[in-house]
Length: 239
Image (cartoon, rainbow, N blue to C red):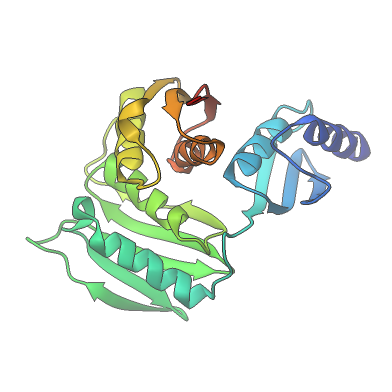
């Protein structure tokens, strides 16, 4: 069974247009129903699509994600951590939260919370993987923090373990609001030209952009948003 699962997964990944196994090979392991994917992929879309393909293979009951996205530029963990902290510190939506950085296992206070206990975010980085923990007051704040971490050019993955307190009920409208917020903050995107729809955490983008690069950036921004399960990119390039 192990050989069948690995062979079928490799064949399915080969057929997926977003995954380039020749330039970015993925190592597969299968044991007791759990399929592990390990390696580096070209972009966030390839990572998400690879996980989707693997989960659809008959006989796979669990997935271990060890895929990392090739960074836009190489950075040391400390540099990535500093960039993430700077981005979080500059964001108005997160201005009331305390900000901590975990350095060699020790927590260092970057900024105190304002107006009492309004949450906190802890930033830690290992091998290019940004780990976010803490508590924020809204789902939008949690999602935006994750995207800001992804936007740092050296980030290879983001693990968003931030909790929301008090808890909020998540839904498609919350996802749409977060994506619109992210697109508006992205200086490389003309957000008013893009329409965002979401159904059962499946996002659809419609509208126009000026280039293929902008089209890819808009889609990547959707994938960066926590809880997005699928993205259909119907954006057209202005002729």
